[in-house]
Structures are given as C-alpha cells and as structure tokens.
Amino acid sequence: MPVTVRLFARLRDIVGASELERDVPANASVKTVWNELVAEFPPLGAYATSISVAVNADYARMDAQVADGDEVAFLPPVSGGSQK
Amino acid sequence: MPLSRIAVTEAPLNITALIQAVSTSPGHGAVVSFLGIVRNENLQRRVTHLEYEGYEPLAVRALNLILDEARERWPAVELGIHHRLGRLAIGESSVAIVAASAHRADAFATCRYAIERIKQIVPIWKHEFFDGGDVWIEGATADPEDEAARQTALVQARGDPTI
Image 1 (cartoon, each protein chain N blue to C red):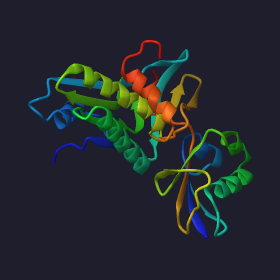
Image 2: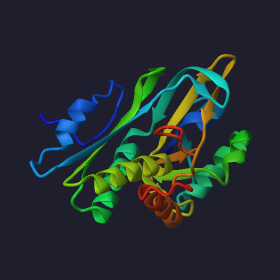
Image 3: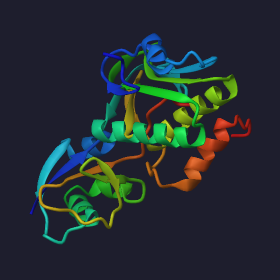
Image 4: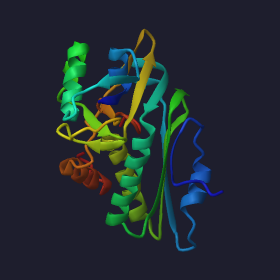
C-alpha cells in the first residue's frame, strides 16, 4: 500500500527530498517504513535512537500501524525557540 | 480579525500585536513577554543568518498542547506563542511568547515554561549558517509524553538557578 514519507532538516538533506512516496506491506508499522528507508539511505541509520515520528501530523510511536495513504514523518531532534 | 494565540509563520513577528491578543482582561496586572532573537555568534562561530524549518501542522498541534499544559498548571494565566519560519537575519525574532495574569509570578513562570517546552517538543529546526559553513542544530528528541522532560520544564519555570 502507498504511504507518503515526510523528512525534515538533516534527514531531508541526507535523502535529498522532503517527501517520498513508498509502497509498504499492508501490515506495516512506522518501524517497517523507517527500516526500508534506512536500507535505501544508510546514513539515516545514525538517527535510529534520536528520531521522533508522526503519523498524519500527530506524534506516534515506532510500533504504530500505518494505513493506506498515511503520511509518515521522521523528525530529527528539534531545535526551535532560542539556544539558551 | 483578532490575532491567533498560536502561529507558525514566515511573516515577521509582532510582539505588540501578540500582547494585545493575549492580554484582553482588565484583571491582568502583569504581562510577561519573551523574544528569542537571532544572534551573531554560536559556539565561537560567526553566524551570518539562520533558516528555520518546521512541520507546520504538527508544530501548531504541539504549541496548542503547550497552551493546554500551561492552562492546567496555571489556570488563570493567558498564553500566546508565535514562532517564525524561513530565513532570519541577525537581530530578527524567531519566537515570541506572551503570558498575562493578575500577578507577575505566574506570568513569569508560564512564559519560562512555554519556551522550555517549545525547545523540547515543537517540530522546528534551526539551520545555522556561519563564516565557513553551515550546520543543523539538533537539540531534544521530541516526545510530548516524556514526563521527565515536562517536569524539568516545570522546575525551570520556578526559576531554579541550577538548571
């Protein structure tokens, strides 16, 4: 089933795109989507323990199921606001 | 149309307008405002400008969550937060926060809580450009359900000088 992958900041730089369309198995979780992405773009692997994820613009967990047409976003550590 | 209390925008921030949008009660005896400003130095690098990138729908949702959390802790305080995106020059404001209440203590605490939570959970990223290169600044792994992080922000809100 198709899902839209959204990437931000350094993750977007690594992949070279802010948005990708990918086909994943029907029972896929966010983790499935991430693992396939890391296989395709190995430098993403460095972010395995520091990313946050969102499904359809709501924070989610790696084990969340994804559905047909979902937007799955991978978020590197955030840095809004001001430095100190 | 009155200004929204929450905004993620490429337009320059207007702290005066945000104060007017947040402090609407004649019972407000204290208004605390905070501006985060792009500065010209970071980690001994000469910063030329910043670019802020955001996941807008989730950033708005996270800012609303911060308003909800603040309202739960300080029910009588009104809060507004506007965050800028895009290219910002030195001296421009990246974030504006306004907290209004009857007395100053709760307004200061709420304002401080808001900026600490923004840095923890709002999906906005800072791309720093400096003399000789550029770097993405990476802070906290965003997790609104991380209770320890939220407690840290509450302690900071009380002005603990050790944090």
